Length: 470
Ligand SMILES: *[C@@H]1O[C@H](CO)[C@@H](O)[C@H](O)[C@H]1NC(C)=O
Ligand SMILES: *[C@@H]1O[C@H](CO)[C@@H](O)[C@H](O)[C@H]1NC(C)=O
Ligand code: FES
Figure 1 (cartoon, rainbow, N blue to C red):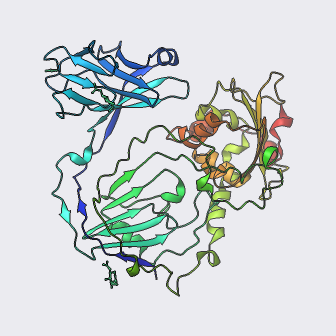
Figure 2: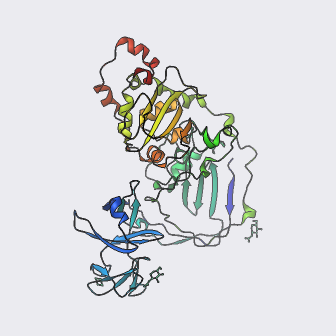
Figure 3: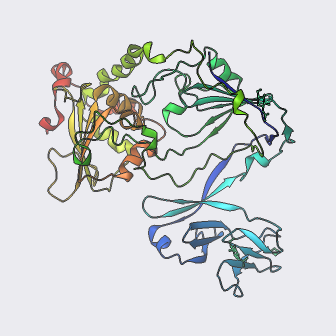
């Protein structure tokens, strides 16, 4: 029932090592001031805590960094005064030279490449040097290249972004969203995947998840088979709820008519590093014979939208509405303290709404001042940026209860946003979409620490409006 794209491949060489898990460690941190003071070219930096030395190279193309440790016998590098370009450093032991702009040893030529450190720029202007270990996990114990024969390559489209690639006996599965909605209940599969899609998932030798959005890894309630190699990336640049969720400002009137692919919006800055993901195989030469490809779906392929089971998932999300925690208005402070975003001159008004974004009379409606993480009843007098967000109550409370990323609200089109001034606050959205703590808020602890509620309050809890209480 699935379209198979078969192809003729002349030669493919497959390099697949037994991959070890890669770990990362921050070896040097510089604050914004120290980063600003770095000059173009080579700088030497020492970690005051352990005395280890690092080399940072700055150019218009950004930063490169490595340990100050020679590949020959571990000697220490110093500035190479003969190099007028300021790109090379010289080893004090036996005079090898390293070109830090290319990380190649100049002398002896073509001998080694210096191991690089990842350079991660922080939101506050600081910088971290990160050591990955092992650097190239796929090079440990590499297998011999395999040569594929004609007809040994098969690409099968399953649904959404999910494909299966068969190369000889090996199967790779990409981006397995195969069941249920993604982004809370914002996105639904259009095409029914083949009936054996979960078997294919379990039979895969490797599953590749291109980025952390839920439309790329929601195979089976978010679970993946055990003992399957995974390649993942934390990169999620590009996708956003813009402009679908915006009203007011530049986008008024367009909202209901905009047809756009949310993956192609560029308002977010891409993440700077991509720590977990590097390709572990290369296809060095391939020719696809498209005359053998089946490009139309088979006649019996089913369009899924005729048979979505909305209620199953919507009921699950809506079950969060009556959670005990929302009987105590202090959930708000507890939640935003857990989220950990502050020292930013932004005030956000959060309004719980019904499905058509009409405020619920018994929903919460509150302000968060992210400058000092306070919860005022009116907007402060100082100059500040302001965002008003109307959120569908079920999804909002589900996200709060489970400590989920705000992608569900934002990319899932579960809110409507207006902003004053009409600018995008990358720092805010980036935090709530990628930087929240890994573990959800400890609501058990919260419930133990809040005073018990009175009977009458318990009955009326939903009728309290936070702003009116204050
Ligand atoms: C260092 O590498 C850069 C970039 O590859 C190159 O342009 C430059 O000529 C090299 N310098 C030396 C001294 O090898
Ligand atoms: C492509 O496939 C068709 C159909 O199997 C075949 O007739 C043709 O010779 C192939 N072309 C090449 C260049 O392999
Ligand atoms: S240790 Fe650096 S040149 Fe020998």
